[in-house]
Length: 234
Length: 290
Image 1 (cartoon, chains in turn yellow, red):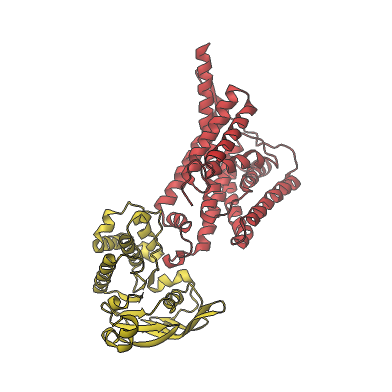
Image 2: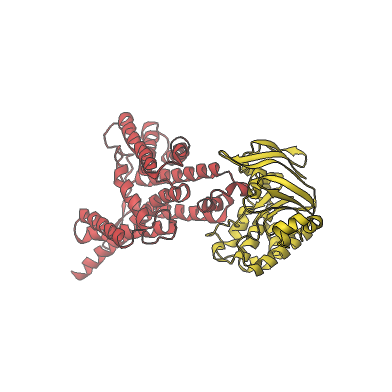
């Protein structure tokens, strides 16, 4: 579904990604794992066209979209839940969800998708009139995911969904990931919480200092000595 | 004797409310643009002046019906607002605030000078004089009543647009987090352009209402620009509801203060109150944002 081929990118004189390639097939959940500063968020920003790669190709369902503007990417079926959730704090939960359905194609299905999101997260229905900024971190994460789902994406990009949340909430966020997968969404997730994320995805890529170091089925990476030593402290 | 005094006081209060509605309309346009784009259009009242001249030129010059002149002038000032953003504000979006003020201030002098060159310094009017209305001992102006009703209707329509439509929601959202708007499928430049056009349309509408009450001259913007700006600051710059309330507070000072003392004293009191507010609550009476 998504193909990233030979992408290099950076900011000014700093290069964050070196010749990164990855692929996400329809129905899969794929993780990009790695330490802080490895370039994971930069990679998602390239995929969402928020920054221009220096070289490399982006393809969605066989169509090259290197020239698409950032606001056109959602029309290709790619929705991103940004790092730190980035809800509109002084809009209500329902207005935040409405923003997720901004594109003309999504507007036509607004009612139907709102119902879908409220079914998935009944708590959001209770909180529909509340200002998003006044909710807890876990609730905000639900709202941010719901907002991305409002566009009816084929591919959902999740940037560090567990970052900045209490350990108990992190557990529930990963339970949430499983439920989203069960709904049939294709997911690309970027995460530092390696042990947890490898339990909910099919495959993973290990990104270190801007380069893909290792890739394979999640269970294989979870069992790999290198990853266990370097990241899981075993 | 006592009773007559009360009737005139009531008349002053009512006139203050009528003036408040008009000032609230002026404040809404300026506040909307600042709240969303974070640039103060110092020349906002000059857009109103341009609209008033357009009406005068189309109605008295070309002989178009007044209603048509109104509609065309609103559309023209809306386009002027969009052009203002595209050519003047967009290039300085990331510049220092002082540079933004200088640029929009420059447009103020440009428009004033251009109006002087094109239309001269004579006072113009469209020759429409609406009658007054007497209720008991009170005299109210029909033009002011119409201005109030239309201003309130326009404010309500803007409120509904901002809260009930996708584009309106995006206008409220973009001031809270511009960087992620593309992830929603929103093109931020387009939202800025729409906001500027809407601010322009509100200025155009204000021109229609003012042209029924005042003569037109190149410096008429100075009669409304500073007051509009002070009202926005007093309500908390960018806070639409604060600006709405502050307009009515300010108008009462002008109207009732002017009645109690002399007309000019109303303005003196209003500005004294503003200075007091700035010492007491520099962020504005109804500050909430930032």
